[in-house]
Length: 442
Image 1 (tube, helix red, strand yellow):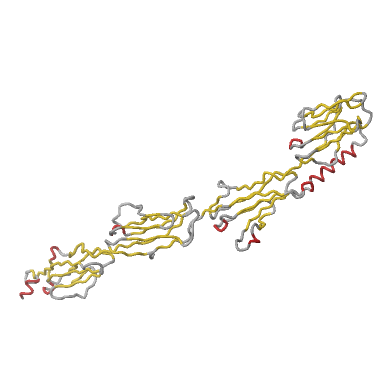
Image 2: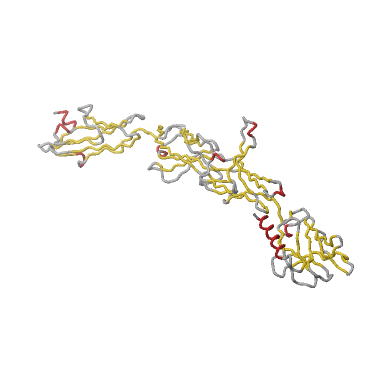
């Protein structure tokens, strides 16, 4: 498109100025190629005095005009050339003072712009634009993230390929695929984008290590489809998806035993994860809310407690974290139950000094601390087993026959059962307290 516009412009200027007197530039092609040679031809129209001819290059500003080469004229024709730059050579074509040339060797990028030729005493000029074509070069891939081509799983990003070209190159993005089992597929490329931009949405671990190729192709005929590529490799950081224990989520041990529980993952992390255990919901006896007890390395996390006690009961968390990105982590919780034998905390009644009047009620309470909960049974000296089960024994409408020693027995299958005994006294209608001894005498 740019080439068509430049050609049309030069053709228009040629028609427009064909009948106008002055000095006009023309060339065999409407563009120059950087690094090659380009020739301007300055034609004189109309009756002109034999004056020096100057080749001019216009800059960005109005007054930014450089005189790059001057053809000195005399009555006998071209005399000499004056130029401050070795890349610019000028003179008359076949010693014809109406047709001058300017040779530009090793065309530079700053040769791009407007050019003109004029007689030294005349200020009127007719500029012609010369585009300088080049490329592709400086092919590069950019990412709209801080980490350039390093991403975290789940991120979104945009990759953009660019290159220095004039006219604009055709830019494509490919995914380089390599199949070791099929040697013919090595270096095959899968087209990802034909406009140089690629959106990555919800980035997955599966593209970690993928090679992205940017290819810039110059489509102008003078460049014969010149192609330049560059490539980058993607890094995706991710954490384990599934954490497993060497035991169940609820582990029960007996007080005094050693605890060794490992946690690991069924899949990988990149880079390798660090596993650690944390005590997040301690037993009621534990004073601190967050206490770390863990052993860690890059493969597994080991919860190791020697001779565990009941204060270590509670909820533990194994966490797999990515050493590169702290926000990448996965965890799983485990309940550790430390079992211990029963201990009767107290055995008491709701009667003062355990004494009641005949016909009254009395409740005996047996409080037990144990894990797991204990089975509580009751007995008395006159009966080896009472039908009541649980922590309370209720005696309604007591008689002298209820005066006895009552025993609470707690058993949870861990260690030995614990027992406590309490004596109950009943004051009979005669005004005397009956006891187990008195009842046995009667």
